[in-house]
Amino acid sequence: MVITARVPPLLSSLPRPTRWIAALRSSPSTLVNASARTVWARLGPRPTARLYHAAVWPSYGVTTPVPDRNDLALTKAPFRFETGYALCAKRPSRPFPPPFLSPPSTSFSDPLTTHSLSQDKRLSVKGELVRGLNNGDDAIVVAENFLGVDDGVGAWATKPRGHAALWSRLLLHFWALELERRVSADAPSLDPIEYLQSAYEETLQATTTPTEWFGTTTSATALLHWTQEQDGTRKPLLYVTNLGDCKVIVIRPSEEKVLFRTTEQWHWFDCPMQLGTNSVDTPRKDAVLSKIALQEDDIVLAVSDGVMDNLWEHEVVKVVLDSLQKWDNGGSLDVPSPLDSSNDRMVYAAREVLSAALNIAQDPFAESPYMEKAIDEGLAIEGGKMDDISVVIASCKKRDG
Image 1 (cartoon, rainbow, N blue to C red):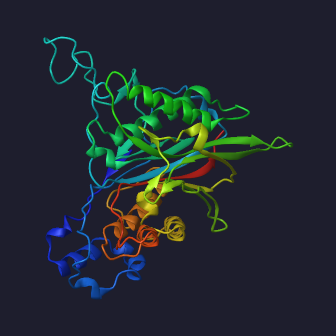
Image 2: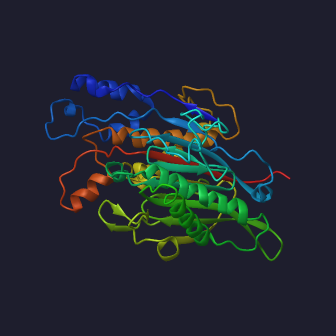
Image 3: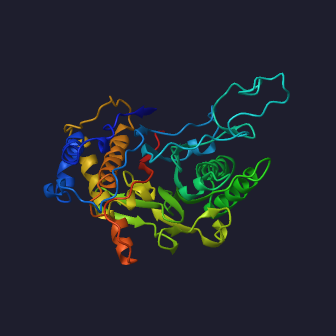
């Protein structure tokens, strides 16, 4: 299920006072959170401010596309995720080149636009539907037992044959394939670092032949499995793998506390550890694996730096808990599209996190974590950071039967 929602028009075309009023009126549900950070006196001219950025329209959904088969071993696991995601790109992704979009023509008699034997416009690699979705240079994958967020380094767009979106998407695709092929519901132990290493090596190969494409990406993934106690009781166990500055946060709503958070990995300011072209980083050497014992209804949140550069962790946690409480209490949800599935609670929470991050990203005068880090480095940067914003959220549930 994918839902597309309209965002406000390009406000930079409006006079400055009108721009601020329109921006605030466009998201009334976030005024309470934004009011402490927005001063009405800022309506006046501020020549040092950066230009206002407009974002690509947000999209929302429950899971990313999955193969048309029901023989995946993980679907028999005793625990599963209820999921939702929300995406908003700074700019559209670059089109994917052949052979990922469609095989090249074999002769001049074939149609020039696509191979005559392949009218399927979905991305594929070696006959496999490419898992996940792109969000600008970010990529996500969301399934009922695993999820991930990769953040492609956008600077590759300025390089010949640079394609960060291809790198982030393929890395998640091959990682998901590793899980589908190698992880069973009753596997006694898992090796997520090795799964990511294999995905990295396959991505290197796929972007080298037949045509070379350059890029790098960070990665944060979570795999839901289980462990068995001595009395035979099964309990959920989460495997989290991280390399770079994407973030996984595990929240226990019943206690309103954070159980776990990944630690960002940096070479220097604005240069996280990353996998790909010319990078010395590798999963086997640099990725960090964590195991977290879960309970039913624990929340697993995976986000790109488009969230964490604009919101502090305590703000993210508050938005998640407040949105879940609002949904459970049946309050006014202020959503433009009807939600009617069992996972809509998660979709709503993801949308609220995205909305809060987007409000700060588009505010040239807001205080933000990115601004704070830049000042610590001696850089004169003000306001939020407009970037691809990817939010994936999941709740741990016991599988029926």
